[in-house]
Image 1: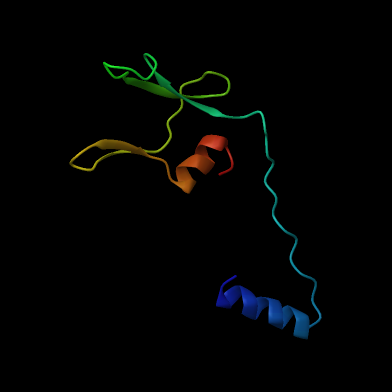
Image 2: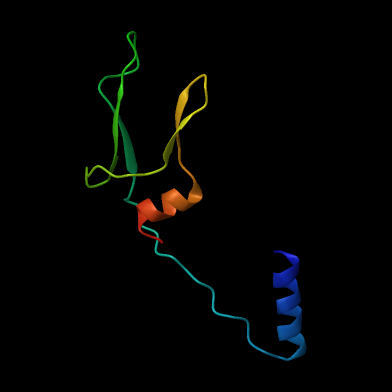
Length: 87
């Protein structure tokens, strides 16, 4: 909890105000993502195909980044929230 949140909580206590209602997001335990490759780990190495949701639908998640030595698929909390429909 940051300074602003602590200050707001203190002001609420002094003024005898109720705490704000917490925001809950639904959790769907059956939901998952599959990172799809064209084969199992072996030599030659498998190639990336796509990312799918639990309904086997192709989804856009993350951003491809060229790090110079490798390419990475960077998945941030924001892109994960969007892919889960929590945004």
